[in-house]
Length: 382
Image (cartoon, rainbow, N blue to C red; front, side, top):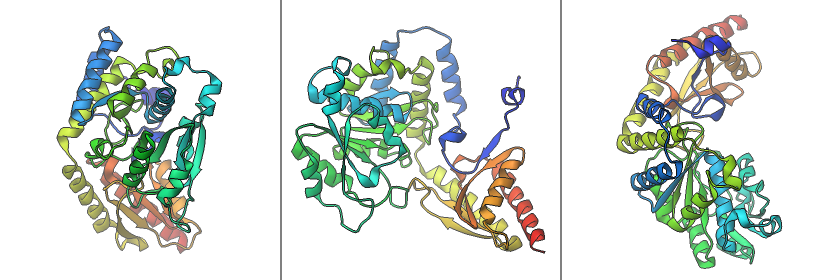
């Protein structure tokens, strides 16, 4: 079989960092790949396929309704647009630029990040609340005062304790309580908040109007897919706004392959649960620690949770070296090999090895490469 990466001269990587988009997110299962191949072989009415897939996804995720988008960022984009359409009472495609720009989306300053361009590019005004710290603790009254006649939604970035989102926001339950009093929908960015699998319905059970997940992260669906679940009134607006309809949805194309692929991935994810994966990851962290601790000045600690606050352990591998920023040198050497190994820095002298995107056999390659690099650093010291 033709090796496309070899033919293009693109080096394969071992992903020891996590479900990062820049290296492909995650790997789809053989069942998902076969379902996509099968779907590509026939023509269907896309709207009919969407209805069937969306209905099944809603059942699997215990939600009133669901919709597949072309990635989580597209999910944010089309969901916020649908909140605006719902507020103004007509399809988004019928709205003028001035009407859209008058609408406001409330967001905590602590939740601002580069991904919120997905909301900003619509032209809505972001109304910021609070501070990205705890100097002045978040209070319900601050959120209440931010609500005005042009408010269309509250946008909330979900994050488990230990993740990368700054402190400075009310908990989601309190936010939903304020939103309910103001009759505003709460849209939850939960792109990387799987596992646990229960998050597929936890946020909407609490009262959020929509929760948005990446299809290409831990769900192991197509990377160019996203999943929006939530209340029927808002999902119906999203379907009206989304592909294949004219308007902004037309540029958010989701093919039959992605629709089927994400469905099969979610079926597998829901049936699998989280315990087996967590146990496997714990074993890999222990294996890394057992082999590397004490080797050429290396120390290994269990880090929990991971970078997104997911309940998955990582190995924090620290290097003792006289050179400046040994972690930078280690990461460079890891990528220099063939296959390259993609990992993330924890500090100037430590890196993270995240087992959630590794497979059997790859852990041994990572361990061997780290031992070789540690020897190089040790020789440099002498």
